[in-house]
Image (cartoon, rainbow, N blue to C red):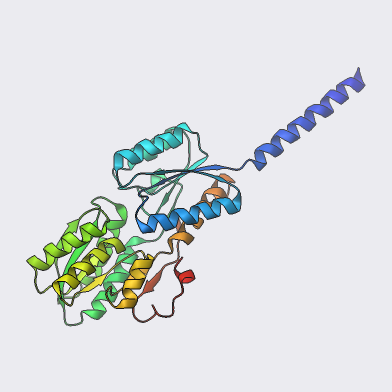
Length: 308
């Protein structure tokens, strides 16, 4: 009898060890909610996420919101229903995205914000940057170009988006200290080239002596560049994101500057952070990304790999 108990106990221990090993080796399933499938920035970020997931042997479940708040919530609820292990989300807006975060929290699924953020109480960490400082960085660069002052129009991106708000505040903080620089217009819109074109056309009509256009992303900036070229005016246009068409426009002398966010690298970093958290590693409040300011001083020296 004793020998039988020992055998049974030995088998039970072995089974328990096998189960424990299987659990430990289980690859996490990462849910990803991106704001767009057409914006070049998110296209590149998604490529980085997929590449990193393949490298680490983890599974991604992707949903894309197409800048539609309702569609983003529906997509996130699908991820919750699928019982993913962790969610990476780029919220369309701070306020509008709250419901999505609350749904994940109710299901006890941890969330990391990527690119855009919300109130820190809703997520484990933010994979991104200090956007106020990025806005200040653009402001300092532009102030250096407008030493004699000038009129500036702003293409601000989606109303309520945390990135837009923080960058706007950072930019205004810097240029507001320069008495000769005046912000004469500011418009919210989707992050599209068509919106940038239309709004820049309107600004150039309303303010014929406009000196510069601040654009919250490269798509808006490229639309503004087209408007400036059509109007045959000399207007400084700044961008943000560093997508290939924008870098090419800087090289051509059409776009004055952009800040490259290296979206593929960013996507890889986000997936790595998600896997680290699932494995029990602690993350900082902000998982900081690397950025590169691109203008005429360095654009000829940069390689595609420098900006990925």
